[in-house]
Image (cartoon, rainbow, N blue to C red):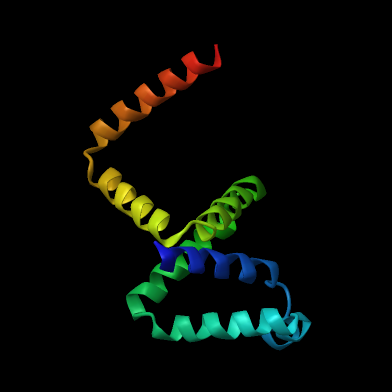
Length: 122
């Protein structure tokens, strides 16, 4: 999960810099941004070829999203970044549990949740 969050952060950085040569883009970054990008590049080099390919696919999908959806992802990434390590572990465990549920069970839980939310608004 943490690896995904820094990848999303890298996606956001790359999206903002997509129109110029790499050298031009790098020179326009602040020293702090340059340091962050170099650190992320070091992380990139440590990824397996499969993880890098996964990143590329996610980047292409991210590029196709509407600005609103991209902003939602940015906000979620920021919220995740602000969680404590314990909160991140708990969230990761819940997400894993959710993903392992059968699709029919997830749909059922979503319907129940939506019903509860409608009743709370009234």
